[in-house]
Length: 354
Picture (cartoon, rainbow, N blue to C red):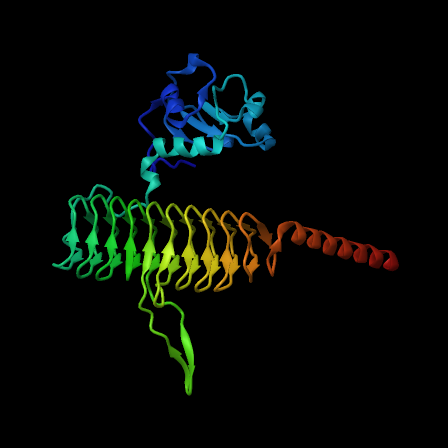
């Protein structure tokens, strides 16, 4: 399948130059001038493309690979056919990510409706009190509210809504259909299509005729270099702030409740739900569809397995899994024991039937 219509190939960068920029070692300098135009998976890589391998699982695919270069660790060098130049890296996954950014810069930001647009579209609405630095792009049907401040190089996508008094830093991408209210956003932040930032948190008190709404007057603070996936929702604080730390990456379809504080450089995968006032430390990784209870703390560097239910505090650096979440070794041991018992019962039943 061709992808060049949406993400055109690079005009060409020499293998030597690419290796230098991504910190890899070109094994054979005779291939230094070979041009690389795009990235590809191993199984369908062609001339002008670069791919990478992380394990011996790619052994069979390599036999038919026609890539112009392969990135790999020295331990896997022997798997690469002799006709394919090798770039050696201790961290090939990271090096490949860097190569992709060089070869396909357009794909590093959300697709827009008017890639070459400049300035404010006549079909957008910008309140007269809003302050936009030079170089801001506002696409058709976007709405910029009163007293908004937006930094240079930021792009506001078609149909996005930026509520009054919101501040957005420089070189940000706010994608089509996103809405941002009661928020302060740093520099180089990417917010994908349909994300909802700064709406009411879920807070109610019991009343004589049902639940009474608790006022939500806090903010959302999003620090530099954060990326927020499509249709993710981040509630504003009740009276304090909801905070997303620098460099944190949040997948699509994540729900973050009011007053949640997430540290720096965390990874939060799709369908995670974090209840109000939870505290997530720096470098925490939350697997897909995790549920995190409110008012608990997950310590720095902790990792939570997919589909886990975290009901109580998790110490720093620990790996937890299961429902309720507990140390991963204990959880896996319990799963193995349960499966073993089930297998024994099945064999016993089969023997009786036989």
